[in-house]
Image (cartoon, rainbow over all chains, first blue to last red; front, side, top):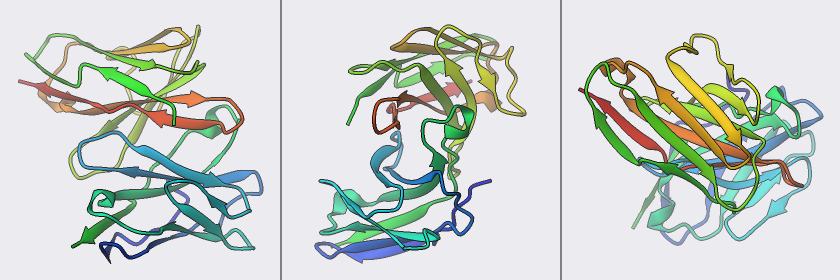
Length: 113
Length: 116
């Protein structure tokens, strides 16, 4: 079973920031938080990942709470092309079979004009 | 990010035939590749983990004799669906682990299999 909890759906206005929450209250000390997204009928796309520090790249920012029990993915200026299902996944990095990605149901983000 | 390709992107076959799907990591070497299956309106389900040069590890409930996996090189893994039936119709997606500093998995674009 997935170790994360996400809202099933969210709406966001085009041009505004999209903030996608994720709860992972049972996360272990050696588990990372990964975010992927899947646009309809395509393979998942890697977005970002982190351990305990906040992370930022060209796609998004990842904010992880100090206790690491939750995180938020931020798309700073959402566009219509960001409409997708977003998956928050916790996994052990560099760890054999424990490194498998187990997908939950994710959050369906709809960006509206 | 790194690029993973899959071929074919779409295949239609008759019941009882076998179908081979290729997964390639284009700009990195992948000692580990994964195969997923996704039914309509459902999430991805891990089928098996493929390690280069060794036998694949299958998830519970996945028939290893039906879904043959070969990972003969560091950039290529294949999934063969043998004696396909209509219930095998699904979206098959591979991923490859870039075990460098970031240890990140990158996914292929998927293969839509329709068994008539």
